[in-house]
Image (cartoon, rainbow, N blue to C red; front, side):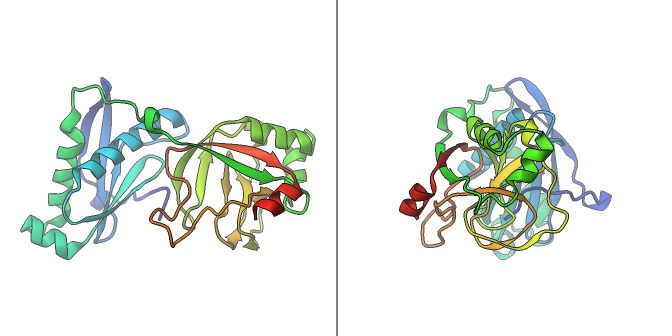
Length: 265
């Protein structure tokens, strides 16, 4: 899984196509990612218009998923792009062009994404899930909340109030399986990542990294500022959909007591 692609090699660039979404002209760039994937970038930047960019990415993702292009094994939406992963052997059989897999698949992607050219595309917001995440902001779990409060020049209780008052969008899933990168955090809470990452972050830890907040679904190293912990299981490989959250979901945090945390664990 991944969240952002930054391939910039000139020799890997494909031509940029023009796609029309809701009467807005947008450039679409398709470039290879190794020998079994390509990147479909629908926008260059995320920060300038995060909500609109996410909607564009999700529209493209849903269109590609509905097309079910033979040989494509996985689609992974990111901040400004979609990763299209494919089985080279299967794609070679389908395309009949084993020496030009990228060109064949890029053409199919352009056809699929451009199929709605000139039509107004229905917003994905109607199908967005709303998910509430209970979080215990107890000092034992909130190892860095004082750092966040000090930087924002507010109290730790204000940090909790601000963090739970906002509505977030899952921009993408990545870093570790099921890790949600959430946009929409109040700017006042933005805090740089720790200079020295921790070697081990407990499962369910809620953190702040720069202008985003997120949740560690698995025990792993990490450099985000920890402000709480959720008892919910964000990643379960035994389920058909292992990740609790998916790109586009709307998320709210609800503060719970330590007793409630223990009861939900």
